[in-house]
Length: 158
Image (tube, rainbow, N blue to C red):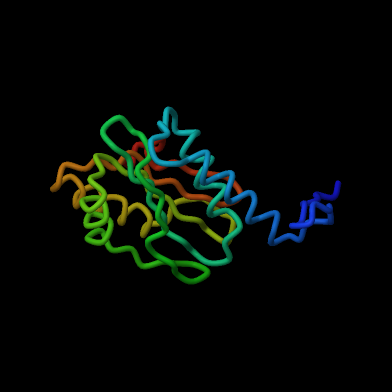
């Protein structure tokens, strides 16, 4: 199946991979715009999977939520290498305070495809939870995106 796009003259042509990805990103952004409620873990997993799965390096992203778990904003805060990204809890907390978030869901990808949490993943989850709790912001989950998806909340680590 070949996807087509309409150009400015109204003619159809085959879409480039870049155009397809741009269109998909636009749809994702509309689906998770400000005010949309995150009603299940699957909702946030879907967002993070769509945003992070194809990255060639680690990206640490945060979904900032209000007190009714409605989306305030999605942000990619840290970019790393093929096997790590340095995460600073202070930056996550600062951004949450600026956005007046009541809760956050964090996620990062494993370009290797293996979604098993490392010691560093568990450690940063603990540090984030502690730092955010100091300013009354709840860490709801830490999701790892690989070929499969791992929720640290489901594993009892959040």
